[in-house]
Image 1 (cartoon, one colour):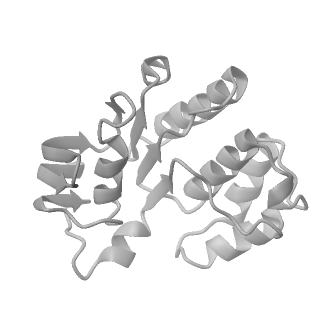
Image 2 (cartoon, rainbow, N blue to C red):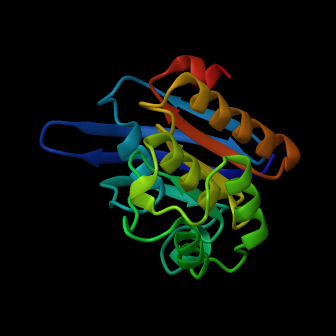
Length: 196
């Protein structure tokens, strides 16, 4: 079975915390949960996977490739939603989609607009008018609108009400069932979310 993501003995040391020798492999078409309490190193592991911070040891392979000299190519096929959503607050949802779309070779405006419609998010709304749940849904819509083969979600449902959490998780399940070539890595301290 082809691996879409592989970590080998990944290590990151901070003054008061060490992520030590993490290894995992996600085959194509699988959903994997990264479970642990707050402070266990889930976000650190994801930042290492996304090449947002440098490892102190070990290696990361995404689609069988290393990041050196291929970061743009690799990230073009990853849909990422972080713990926090950062946007230009005075811009509209539609502008945000157009802006983001310029960074991806396979950006599909129709998919983006369809997801906005499904989430009941108006393209004319300014970002500062969106609730926390709507911001997460917007982030998810952006992460899914460029045909990613790997979807990485860092605590996407933390702090959301149960209805919004269910909507987000149902969409993720549908996306991977519709296209079994995709894989999802989702971190959470909410074990019920991972079970779904």
